[in-house]
Image 1: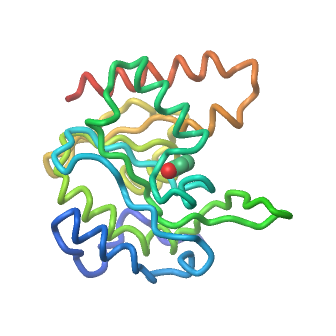
Image 2 (image 1 turned 45 degrees about the horizontal axis):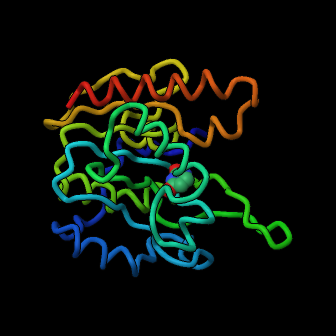
Length: 207
Ligand code: URA
């Protein structure tokens, strides 16, 4: 049977509308079981009035430790790409579709595990709340998980990156996740990075 759609499900109860209240409420989130093993909720970061919101999949190991999104290796690559694209990260609201780190223990290491549809759905009220509170002009998904949440289950980043959909006064778009560059073949990294920068330039031009 197909997994239930993330896109068509209405959000559960609406969350509070100020970012500070949302953040506080999300810190105690038990909507799914991921809170049991993660260190903390990693809520979004950036100015409440940001015009651009970037949405990743879920915090990684470093983010879980620091409590901030995109501060590990993928975050550093994203920072470089933003600089090259002429986007000031301090003006961007950066968040994730899932706010707790999901991992599988391997020895002393915690290895990223892909969140399930029900975990993504359980986290959806926080992302909806962030979008409502920040009111960005453009929301860009980084990678497949966030793209499916924002643009629908049939959205394919590999084929549709850079497409723009207008909904509820927002422009929604998607590009690849910086982790895909880090995980990909080293000989393709330079080109993949340049493509990400190009996409980010296109996103900046929507603002
Ligand atoms: N990958 C993500 O999707 N988000 C983060 O915050 C870090 C890595």
